[in-house]
Image 1 (cartoon, rainbow, N blue to C red):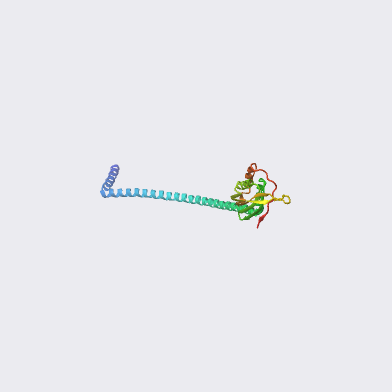
Image 2 (image 1 turned 45 degrees about the vertical axis):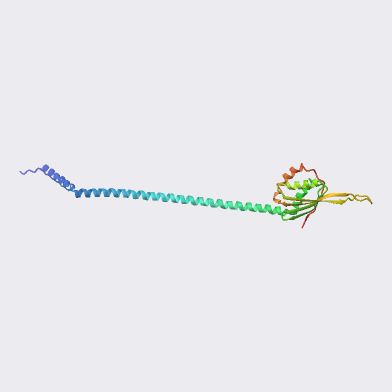
Length: 233
């Protein structure tokens, strides 16, 4: 009967395979090749990871950029709307100012005479002869027996809260004959002072001059009734 030692044969075969593998891997060329393959695989892994990270970072940056552009567009729209509102408000203010100036200019001579009438009430012995208005310049002519009254009248014009500005007063004394002289007697001479006042009139200040006028009223004595002639054309 023939016997076979299977255990030895398997062991011998396995040992031979190991020896063959060791022989192959012990070769410098084979080791270099395996090392190159490992390095190449690691390099591919690093490059792949870097590419993936770069793509993700780029996508995130593009998303943030789009978000910033959207916010910038919204901000620009808000600023544009604000500029339009500011322009409308400025336009409305200009229209209001123009309407105020138009109303003041439409008042014309009546406003001038009313302002003068209020000041003549506070000043005695003032007789106006004429009031001429050329643009914003006034020329007021009159006379008085009392030079102090002229000074008080000029003061009431000067301290008018900007209604009358750049005042210039010219006075001239003259003598006139009294009407109450007896027959055959030489009429006594009376001295009067003629005055000419030149000033600028600012109708925009008409509303603010009331308080100044009231403040000055206490320091100026009450006047007699006077008559004012209308402005000359």
